[in-house]
Image 1 (cartoon, one colour):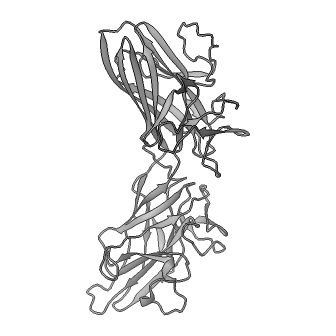
Image 2 (cartoon, one colour; image 1 turned 90 degrees about the horizontal axis):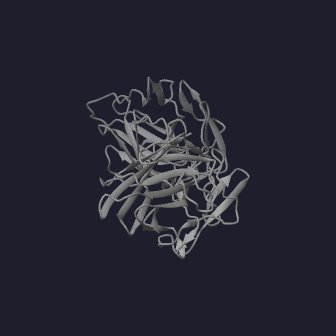
Image 3 (cartoon, one colour; image 1 turned 135 degrees about the horizontal axis):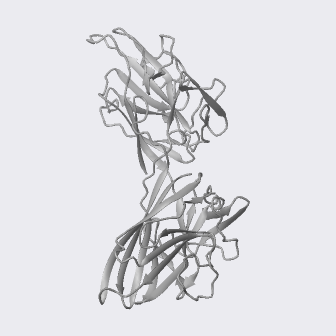
Length: 447
């Protein structure tokens, strides 16, 4: 999932909450003897709470004006490299650090500077006490070549005037609070606190940011002046864009199947995080109810509210969509004698028009097992593992399926899953056969 974080030196977008949209594509070819195929997929627009999951910047080095290189300037951060005369140079091995507080790894793939300033070189590197740029320092202990990446060199070229390509992997973080930012290299932990509204490096905290093991990396900045330069002053602020990808091999919202019909699961896997639900034998003036069509499972670290379900294209109002607790009970009032109890803990989200009585809250997720990556569902103290039924991850029937022997009752706010009941109330068809192409969107927000 691509992320761009633009700052001066801060963020371009001010996301206030985490929103995931699940797109459900319903392809209904409805006639008197029709079958329904529903494709359910995650086409997620994920906005990350700035105070929880966005990349953070942490100050360390001081400039020769007696202030941190990284400073607060109103509603943004800036880099002040000081004022320099012709022929002078200065290297800041720890001008600032990029810290990932999110519970997912982040790979930095590009850092670009607006206006492409000259007389500036930048590195990502491991040890805050070891400079990378040997040309402008007079010390013996410099950063080993394998522990640094050149990211800017008077433009986006390396020393041989070739385009710069790099990647730097940040490990998952441990979150943050309003006043504390935790950073670690896997063995040492530090806590940055705010000074003048800027995160500042903990003097007792880790100095080395081993790639892939640390959730932070040091940024070195070298400013220099050559004889004959027309400009004698080299000063910020500098606007920087950081691009990269959050590493999310398993989705934060997953689908889980239940019972079997006609010899196989009702749902089957499609490409990516997509399932298809097959409902057969739809007839005029008949109601088909699937109380355990599938479950939505929150695998992420925070609660999720299912704020709405919108259906587009169901012109005749055939569909009903409920969220409920017990897969063996009916959520809807269909006036049917199916030998099942009616559900008490239920929420109607769609009955021919978009509506809901109240929001359903999914509890915090438990992620996936470390041993084999199986999906965990349930509630605190009563967790169950959903397993794949068969085949490779891309196989048609490689599905998350519930554990029949487990407690499969979903408690609102406590359980990280909920059952989706889908029904088709087929009244008199307006013509012999019709085609209905509908889209169902499950809307989530952080609780």
